[in-house]
Image 1 (cartoon, helix red, strand yellow):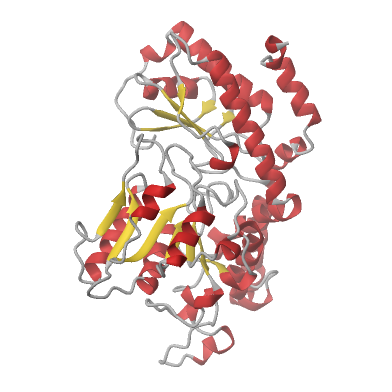
Image 2: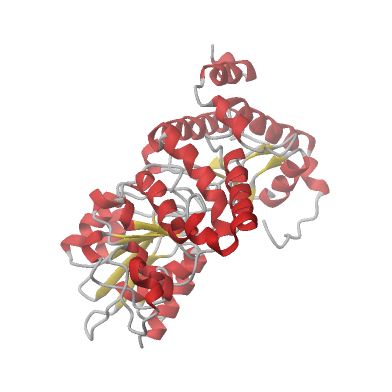
Length: 429
């Protein structure tokens, strides 16, 4: 029974019963490829390709008239994308807008919400965060006259993989002016207990912001219900918006009157934007944090991609994602933990505590094993010093795909195929 449970035939049977399996046909999956890197760059959907073609045709046919006459009009494109994403994150449509990049949005929102005083000027973050977030926070501290080293508190991990929410709460002292955390740790894939952390910050009257880049599109969120103050995330991972796609920002409506600390003309009140007055009147919602005109060509693929999410529903996708990641963990436990394979799962096993990728740890040769996977048509990614990340995205990944990836790992180690590759890392891993 156990042997059949872990067989390719059993995986194929699960795919045949999967109501989401036909979604794969709506994506351009590279030929002869097992794509497991959607947590870094999602694949192109047919809908995204079509929405980009429509924008190009509108530009060709309408020229500048496309700002008001295209379908949808470019002038409200960022807001339209915000409406589509709002349902994925548990927010009202006017609390979300597509704009800028993740790092720029961190700067925009932190500059607005970080209001240091003599006795309260520290920012609380974590030592496992993606580096760009830390760069931005240190920059903001310096711009506000604080000490980037002394006034940035980084909560340490107990095991090098995950964070304990109790440790984060313990650092929310009277000297903390802002908390900024990831929803998901980019290495291990741990999903933090965001409701608990938001409640703890609110009880201490500390504004809290989130970087949800590694969770939006993979798991459901309740930003309003959790009473998050602000959040940012990218559009090119699980949302499949394409390389360099616009990012998103969320501002809780409690703060609409706050206004942006860094203003630009596309954040002006929409109905009066072309009055071209020199006094700044922000749009009285999340749109007020826009700075520049949206890049319509870069934003267009998101429209087609997000229509799939609206059609299927994030709760359905989240359920399959947890089934796929759980199946991957199960196969690794059954086939890859003992010598000579010696892999370990660095991602929480509780499905409620993980996002859409699994971190496989191996003390030695993880990088070269990743290269061997690529040579076999499997696309993972590597994070130093010892992680291979695998993301079985439910929109275009099946259970048989997961089985085959594990089988490739078995065969690579059995045949010592990884030893033929140079251990020198490439520029992008």
